[in-house]
Amino acid sequence: MVYPIVFGQLLGILGSMKGMTSESVASQCVLKLYQDGGIQMIDRGETQQLAQFAAHFVTDTDQTQGCNFANFVPFGEETPLQRAEWIKFLGVFANLESRANQVYDAVKQNYLCLSKTVSSQTRSFKPIAAWMQYDNVSGVWSFTKETYKLKYVEDAGGENIDKSINKITYNTSNPDDLEDLHAILCVSYRVFLIMKV
Picture 1 (spheres, rainbow, N blue to C red):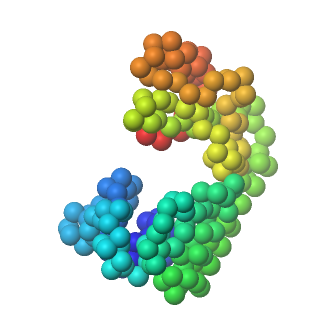
Picture 2 (picture 1 turned 180 degrees about the vertical axis):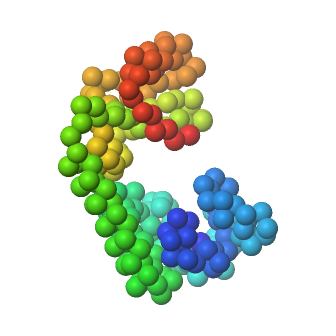
Picture 3 (picture 1 turned 60 degrees about the horizontal axis):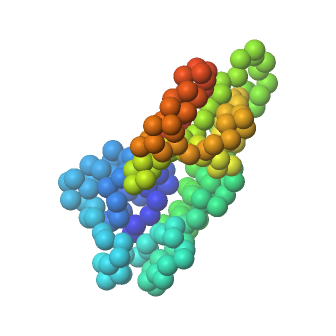
C-alpha cells in the first residue's frame, strides 16, 4: 500500500507501506525503512509497478490513473482540522476506521484546547508570521497565502504578515528582488518565517 505517510504513522500501519514515489520524506522511520529495503522507490509514471499495490494514493487528479488509485486531496481544505480529518478517509482503506476516528478526535480536542487557551490570554505583543516557500527551479521565494496556514497562525495567537507587502514573489537571481526581500526581513525583526524549501 502506498499512502500519505503522516497519517500512516498515526494509524500504526507503516509496516504495510511498500513503496513511495519520492525520497523527499520528513519521516525518519520511513527513510530508515527505505534504506533497509523495506520500502521500494517507485516511478510514478510506471503504471505496471503501481499495479502491484492494493492502493496508490494520488493528489494529482487531472492525470489518468490505474484502477488501484485513490484521490487523496486534503489540499483543497481551508482549515487545519479539515485537513486532519482526511485520516478518516485513509482509515477506511486499512480497515481502521475506529482508530482513525480516535486519532482525529484527539487531534481536534488538543488543537481546539490550545487555540482556546491562546485566545483567552491577553498580551501586548503578538508574534507576526510569514509563510514562505522557495522554488528550486525558478529560484523564487514567495509568501504563501494558503488559508489553512494563515489559520494556524491566528489559532496560535499570532498575526499574519500584513497586506502592505504587496509583492509576494522575490527572485533571488534578481539583485533588486533580493534587496527588497532582505529589507523586509531586516525591518520586520518581529516576523517569524515559516519556510518550505
